[in-house]
Image (tube, rainbow, N blue to C red):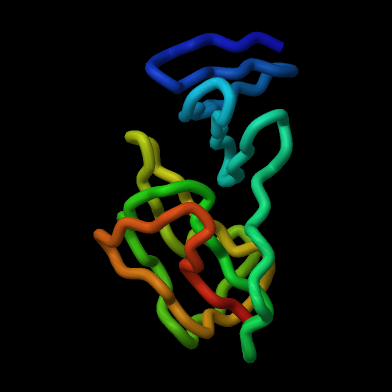
Amino acid sequence: MTATRIGEGVYRIEHEGRGETVYVAGPPEDCWAFWNGHVFRGAGKESTPRQRAPRPNVAQSLTAPMPATVLKVLVQAGMSVKKGDTLIILEAMKMELPIRATGDAVVTAVQCREGQLVQSDAVLIDLK
């Protein structure tokens, strides 16, 4: 495997004939990496949302992986989504972060709007 820095916080990873782009942000003691729709934080552990009180009629809430600006909201309440569909695009530290459905579901609520600044772990979309 080889890693090549191609820009500030942007790396090209080559492994077994495949090339991927990985974005890295934050200080060394608390860095974030973004790859293929997933955000990783710290020592190789995927970030997980903080525990919240259960919310009625909500099977899952998709949250912001880091402080960001909502660039595009691609869904609205009542829409059916499939696993892997991009629901929202965030922008943080000059990189776009697509937030994808983790499974087939129905959007029950959109908790953000385009142009809004959101904090890490802010609820963006509720799914059922």
